[in-house]
Image (cartoon, rainbow, N blue to C red; front, side):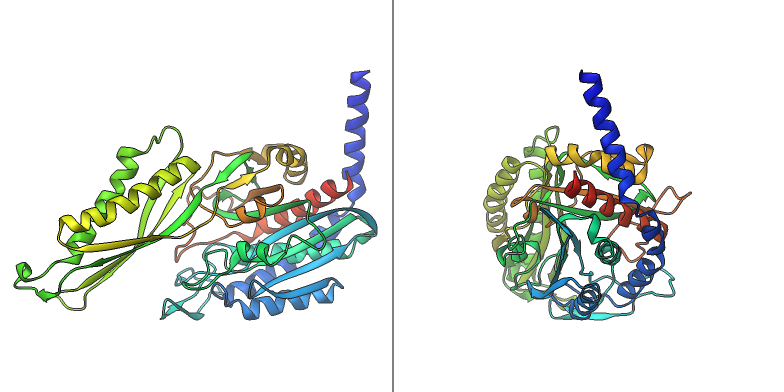
Length: 423
């Protein structure tokens, strides 16, 4: 009897896949997806400033007949597609912001855009692949809008701003979208998201059940000393020397106080700013960095020790220092039950040999705020060209994505959506 039930389930599943019948629609959307991606890449916009990006997204969704909301969390766009049959509500999410990074890759659609970040004019580039995420989800929206008869339920297409973090003094991103009710009216039952990976072979998918990406907290340290002439350092208090010792001390928290065999912890300094001239010891210095953790207990302990250590080290060098640690993003956590449910869909889209499980990584994602509210699944899409073995990292000027893998992103979202809603 058990064998008969299993056989019937396998037949039912195979039939469900066959019923989708959207291979032609998916293959025909590829040129559009690439064209959209190149346009977004050439004209990137920073977090909470994605005005033109949002306009293009909204115009496309409206042309498909979706119910469209704009201005969510400043520049976010949501399209609502109701299938011809009743059922659950599924959300699909793409992030839409770029980074203050100059582009060096020699592309015909290379970005030369400028923006303002922390009061300075900066180059702007889609150095994390969010342009591909937008284009993929726009392609999925078009395919699904043309096949409403195959949908049992509703799909929310969420185009989210400020995944890289809102500018100082502002709110934004997934947290703000959740607070403004993006997962309500109608209430979302589950949410899927993807991220392109420059170092992952094209046409592959990577996943992990449970925690897949780290929690992240940005921090800012301000050190105050006493200005003096560079020839008489004993006449003042050197905030730069104190800053050096603070940075060194913070790294010992990771190497000497964290049980790294349990989970990873990464503390990185991204900016140091102090002084104007070679012969003046300045009055102040600023240190900006991030902390990445995969365990909430270790995260809390790091916060505690950082707040203790920073002012203590500064005092040892006759300076004063304050530290501010932001709320950051939680751990990106894939619901185990949902992950198990959708794994066959990932394999159907890419092929069994193209789907693999990975260990948790220390990158972070504010998709985690959606996952705190509803079950979610976040996975990675390969973007490294065939034959390549090394790739430039995300957030760097030479970051590059092979466009031949974008179609798999579309196919995977379509497969997952129909399987989730119809089975």
